[in-house]
Amino acid sequence: MSKRIAVPVLFTILITTAACAQTGGGSRPSPAASAICDLGGGKTVKTNYSSPRVKGRKIFGELVPFGEVWRTGANEATTFVPSTDVVVGGKAVPAGNYTIFTVPKADKWTLIINKKTGEWGIPYKYESDELARVDMTVSKLPSLAENFAIAYDKAAGACTMHIDWETTRASVSIAAK
Image (cartoon, rainbow, N blue to C red; front, side):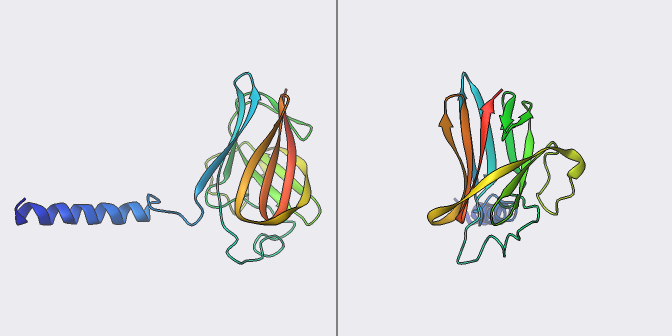
């Protein structure tokens, strides 16, 4: 390859690499993650979120204040996509695309299911688009969960959503309607 071609090719590679890093094509401090609840018969609930890390910080009650709406993860608002009508913590949720937020407290959390999608996450200004607010149970994890995670435990035709981070687990039941 001649020097006349090599320099422009190298320049193009450097510019492309820099652009990818600035637009999220590079690694993110809070990487994308997902969880799926398999309700059986091809019915699912899929959750996409960004997973922040504890990094030695006090999370609940400090970084994430008690009693305030939290985007439940990092970056873009966390998505909640049931492929079928479901019941979440006793409240009916039609199949569709939603975002979820939470209001953490020391002894109880509230899950907010919102009809508005595509927002960054905070500040929260979407009360008029709320579909439901559901109580979640809170328990202590046996050890530190460094990575924020959403996971589902499966039962017959139902799942329990767990939100784990630091030493806290918030849970809610989800069943096919």
